[in-house]
Length: 213
Image (cartoon, rainbow, N blue to C red; front, side, top):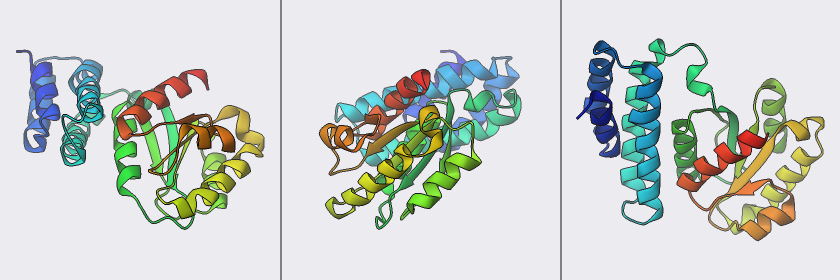
């Protein structure tokens, strides 16, 4: 088994204590840092995402794998050409005003980061102005992710997307929405570019939307 495969296996199994050391060993053996990132970590998280979708594993295992990957990335970062880690693009993420839920949003952020994006997480209970401000402050951001986990905060999600749709920067961003009560039909109705039902699909959707942004 190659060192990169060992890294991938440790990420998949969520062995956070081992991942850093294995990444270092792979680097010492002369493995290409970008290959370690793509094959050892991003691909491994892809496998984790698939298993999650098929109900073979659940949120705790997914979080553990994402944490393990984070440890690996910390060791790898100095060896990647600057900006190499955020080659997929930049995303602004937040839970809409009035909503204090963040587990789903955090999972989505981790999965999107593990797909190679840089994620700017605005947190929970994010007012519309803060989303707009963040996009203006990050002209290189191509994705905005808004999450609502309550039926009572769905109107806030609708208002947030409506406000973003009216901004002059609208043509350079894609808006993704998600959360327990949200459906594809609701996403279409409020004018979002994409909807995903779970964190693994969100990462795939982010890649697809970024490619067309």
